[in-house]
Image 1 (cartoon, rainbow over the protein chains, first blue to last red):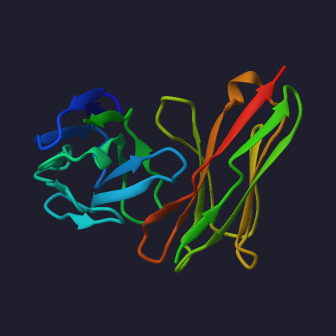
Image 2: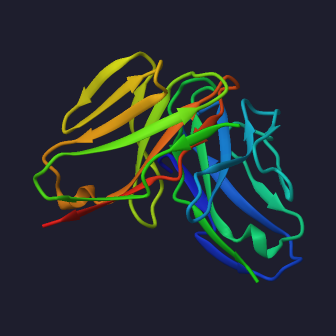
Length: 113
Length: 109
């Protein structure tokens, strides 16, 4: 692995179903982030983690949950998907929470019907 | 509220120069980032400014004026591969990035 990987690449999901988006980084970065990107809008932060064992809420956390059991993995779970969660989801990481550059994974395109 | 403004779309000619502007109003300032994003791909880091002035990196330069809440990205000697969206993002007082919607740059031969 080099950098950040995300899985799946894309997914079509029925409303009401539970879904976990996976994110793994091998850069030993302390901070990790989940964003969603919608047409005409800037990236919006869903949840973040400054270090393993801690998580925080971003701008649009409702309907999503995260965990950070170790440094490398930061999964995002939709407990009961709704059509408004149709979006492209990007995971990112940085060495620390402050002004360090964020590096992005390739994204997951999620469609909720 | 927090706000980042940049033009939705710009068109330029191969070999020319283009300037993409970004204005911001945020709660606190801990630096401004520019990212490039090709269609269907992830954003990739281009530049970071925290002090006023111009930062040059090859064909790309980025300028910041904190007093005016203003930045621009300057792309010289445009190539077809520069066709992409350019995202401006400001790190606020909570060290969270606030993102603009992006400027789609179209390069014509």
